[in-house]
Image 1: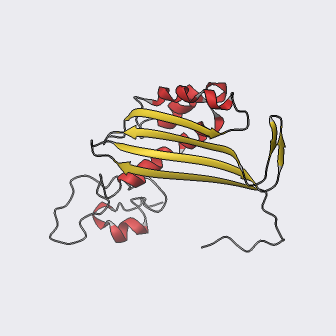
Image 2: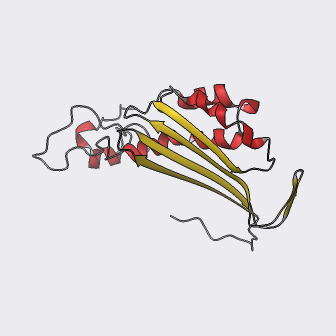
Image 3: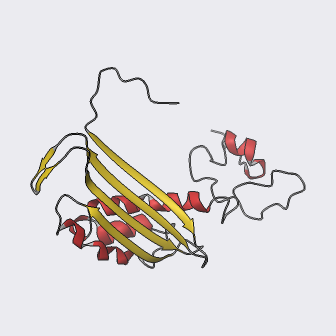
Length: 191
């Protein structure tokens, strides 16, 4: 379902875009490349000087290289457009602190502990927060099976599919699991 039609005329003032791409590498690792951009529709006067409308206020990128267990093995950060050149773009090395973390085991907590506030860049840290679920989507059906033996003669997995009980729609006491993963459905306790 789309958003409703706006009730008033509107003028675009700001666009933030986030793009995440996942790449399977020849060496068995994966690169999760993420980019965040901010663009004002009109000319803007910043403390550091004027910016013409339509140009990037922020253009920041973060690459996490992960293994098949989603352990971070390498990190790269780039700041191609920032509001305070010579200041905002000098802290990318701080993101090396993410090496050794696991995207599914306390990553967001550790990210905040290590890089919140003045320890990191607000925008790079915000961008890093979405990478666990982006990596899960990348691994789905490529590294991890997401179906539960659609055909009756297929080999059945021995473990519950990883995505069950990870969101409202795929809770094991719900209708989607009953329909698409009937082997894993759990009857709700009488209330």
